[in-house]
Image 1: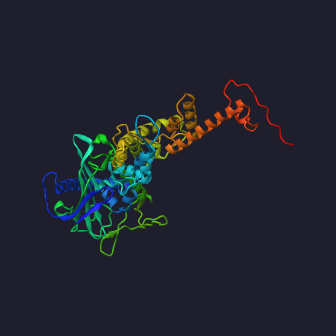
Image 2: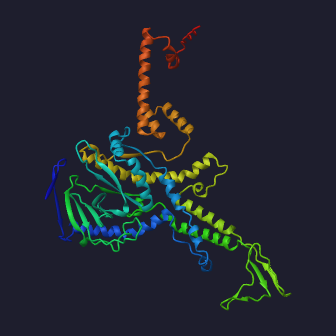
Image 3: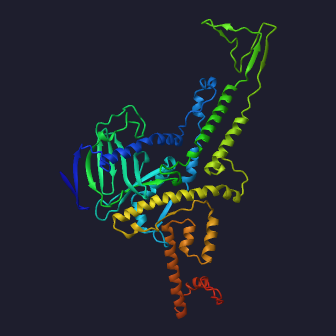
Amino acid sequence: MAATNPFRKVAVPLHATNDYDMSPGSPFWWLDRLSTTLFDRQERYDLLEDYMLGNHPLPNGDVRFVKALRELQTKARTNYVALVVKAVTGRMRVKGFRFGPEGQADAEAMRIWNGSNMDVQSPLALNTAAVFGLCYGLVAPPTAPGKEPKITIEDPRMSVVERDPLDFSRSLAGLRMWRDSENKIMVACLYLPDVTHVFYAPDTRFVTESKEARITADLETRPQASRFTLISSEPNVLGEVALYEGNWQPAFGPLGRAEFEDVLDIQDRINYQVLTRLVISKSQAFRQRWATGLEGKAGKDGHKVPPFDPGADMLWVSASEDTKFGDFSQADIRQALEAVRDDVGDMAAISQTPASYLMNRMVNVSGSAIVGDQGPLVQKIHMREAAIGWFYEQLIKTAFAYKGDARASDVEATTLWVDPEIRSHAEIADAMGKLVTAGVPLELAMERGGFTPDQIAFAVKKAEEKARKEEELAVRVANGTATAAELPQRQAGAKPGNNQKTAPAKKAL
């Protein structure tokens, strides 16, 4: 059986085969190689996801207290690592793409971007990359004439690529694997430069009681390549693997590194100190008392029990003259609180997150101090923008490649980001005014001010309309055809050095 895609005009063979060919470079060889890499990463992904969601490993303390106060272990977990991520991703927003060394944001690129709902998918890609260290994007060809290529952000827990060791920007193969819970099968799409293969594993065994959303949660064992069946193969007219990998911190190797991976131990220390504080508070709710000269009472099972039941409204009485009562001094939790503050400060320093974000303390702080506190964060955001910007550029350039556009090979393509530094409106207006006065083009001044390409285009259009109207008015004034109502406008826009004044119009009685 054969099906034909009328738009691409390429015969697409549809077939099912169990020909398990494991020769290097074969579809099953790539499936086994990439799926093994994907499943080997799942344990690390699960750990990072748990930390981001606040499901940290339960802190341990003195076993005598922890066993009795087990519920405090859960309450002791304080999710600071999520703040470290949000401090970065919350300030990253794409505002356009530029092709060539100069010029405004490319309107066609933004049309493709918005057509793929990337205004919603982009924050998802940023958070995914910050949490797992990697994110993936797939560019699909147009489905019909007049349609745009489609960009989708893919989950790193279900996607993997193998890069060319000689060319970091090129992928030799890519794999997307997910579970079809309705049909109880695993689906795998293998992307090669010349062809795309689709595999099914209908005999995959599922764990019916699992409520986890992870790819490994519903599998008793990882699916082996031999259990898959090749269902279909479709030629790749692009000639390149259209599944791209975004690396959050490229300097840390091909696997990528999460935003908070350097401070996981500090997060554990914070949880431990918070548990210590809770245990002390719980155990010291009543002052710890002692008594001498008393004998314990015998319980029902023959074991001795305390002669008194401590409580706020209990009175202790003893008939023996040798009995003495007393209490221990109150426990001091200030050291535990100070240890938490020190650990939070260490986390802020190592992650380059402003301490005011994590400590929630800002009293009588000057503007220059705030700028200095946020300086390292802004520089770190620029580094993340450079890494993820390359990833976004590959997606847009691949979309243009499907359209046969020359921008697909533009080596100067640039992702434009909104300025991550927070400034007041007065500061932005003052800076823009000085730039324009110094001769900087309005477009560039507005771009430095953080305006979007649409806003810049609108402002430029209005500025051009105003300049054209002033030129037309100047011609009418020179010809003596200008009306009295137009003269005040001309006077307001007069050039410096023009001392001629126009008498104001008399008010009608």
